[in-house]
Length: 428
Ligand SMILES: *Cc1c(COP(=O)(O)O)cnc(C)c1O
Image 1: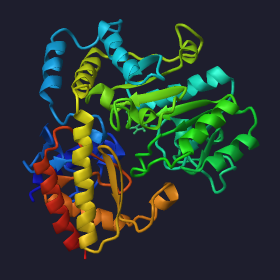
Image 2: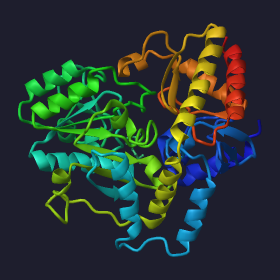
Image 3: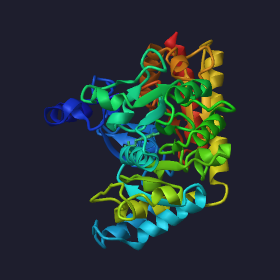
Image 4: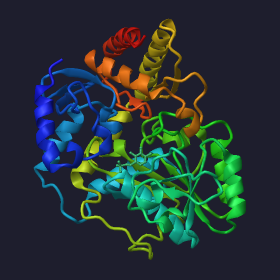
């Protein structure tokens, strides 16, 4: 596998971009010690700067549920770009995309578009604080909600102690307002509420965790959060930036039949362009400026190109049978890989909801951050490289989800399973 061009581009990039990248997860060392620079994508495939082609299971980390350069999205964008790229004034497109989201997710009565998932979660937390007049929030170990100061926090040693920041630059005073509990552990959340009476503005959770590998909520977890927040006058925020329109049209809240107070979205609703959104109860959203006193603004919020790509994507996803077909193919992929691992005598735990899945190199159930961390990351790294050499592009970390798009054909999946067979043999 030739990677000369990627390596040369990486050397140039490193001089002007820290680590040569604009987001740290991209900085893996592929063959030759540099990340692969991508030149183009079409459907389920990407091609790197040296002309190597891969079946892509990163899908831009979530947005590309239709695959790369979907003809409907490309056509809509071509037409839209001729009319200008941004006006800083309202357009009909924002109402059109909002209407589709409100229809798919009944808990969202009103919403606002921003430019990233980080902005969405950051503002949802500010709004929950403004609505309740409280400062503290509860989050879960291993859940990722973007990189805003108060959300870059995991638990300290004891779940009832105050959180410590994960990154230099996050003020301790900010982190102190973020309490973190183990995922799938409503009893700990109950204890946190008891220890902080009248102080918790919101519980924010990935209703299906997908940023420590995929971890499904156990029965009673999300219901427990719903009733606890209700009983204590706190808001429940579902961060569906990755699960919205991914695990079902109505996201995880549709699957589990739970109505959060606020929901954050991103990724798929922008069809591959930068977007985020937060929304929910109309009485809460009425607090946002200009209706109310909670402030948030954005030069490119509701950008016409992002709205256009989002509308085209959601309309394509509204075609009958789309999610059934994604489910069928993802089940085929997951069982194929699990079968090959089993045949090779390699312990593996596969977690999956629809087209979102992780194959953990683990030998016990993965239910939270602590159990996810028992996975053999060195083995995953070897697997990742072996798959890359066989033309399959997976996320470089064990703690990321693999994603399928509607463009992933049975032939892609067969090729992937065959590659896994070869890779597992090499792992011995
Ligand atoms: C990706 C992601 C975010 C952050 O979105 P960005 O657009 O990268 O800022 C927030 N929450 C979850 C659950 C995500 O997966």
